[in-house]
Image (cartoon, rainbow, N blue to C red; front, side):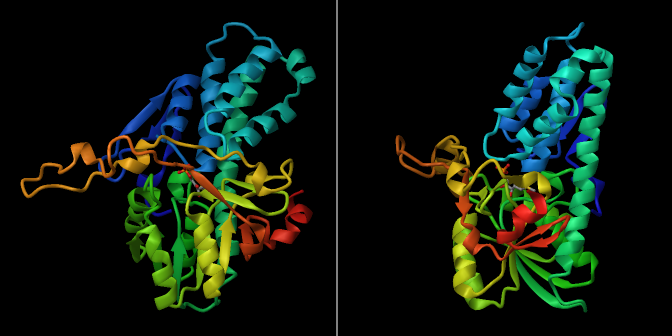
Length: 359
Ligand code: MRU
């Protein structure tokens, strides 16, 4: 990552400073979380988003909340604090896994035997280690992704969806991390970034990251991906993921599934870049993955229709008739059969092999 500018999460011990991603690309403002409630707000309202970044924020939010207890709470009180954080966004498994791993490190028996100070210190060092591990794994999966492409510098055209970059992780990114690594390896890249309706993570965040990194790119609407695949030789579609079920079915940002169908039709390899933390072997298939439904406003409002005098034509960017019912599932599931391979920190893994590598 070239620019410190892109780092979204700063642990400052007294609080957690988050780059407010609701304001990008307009403004660079910081949101300061001082307790679990602030962290939950930040996750739910998308101040911070992206599966790995959500998990890191949740853990640090818990660390801040623990400081409010003057004496050691019971194990079940502690679990209540954690559960509220885990429930803040349902689809990405990283958040739940982070707390499961903390519980494995310090199970109830150990919790009863250690001091409150020790528990707080261990929780903080665990949160820091999850942050550092995410960065390390992203850098490694980026390198592994490079191995899928020619070893000599080549012209490569890649489509990506949503935002999976430094902003969505501890740094570097997953799918966008592979793209960064390809640039570092000397390839001549053209990236097509889907705008990612309705929340526009592609337009607001990925386009911004690509420009900050000086990676040549075009912003396209999601509906243009078919045209791009039909008229250009696309080398790969690379996306991130929020949860991979045991059979390889993968939930990611809404619009990923149609992109995978298009890729199959056009014979374009479809890769999912992910760390081990995205795999959920407790869930047999994609139909068991909880899909977050978000507010209708995200679909019915957009802010670009203006009169000549610059005034909005429709009330505050409304683009649909008042009272229309809109559907807003935030994620869809891509069947394993449409996924060429997972690009992970442990190598390139075919969907049928994930349990051998991560199970
Ligand atoms: O709703 P978001 O912006 O949190 O969705 C993000 C995605 O779908 C990403 O592809 C996924 O979390 C992987 S980020 C490395």
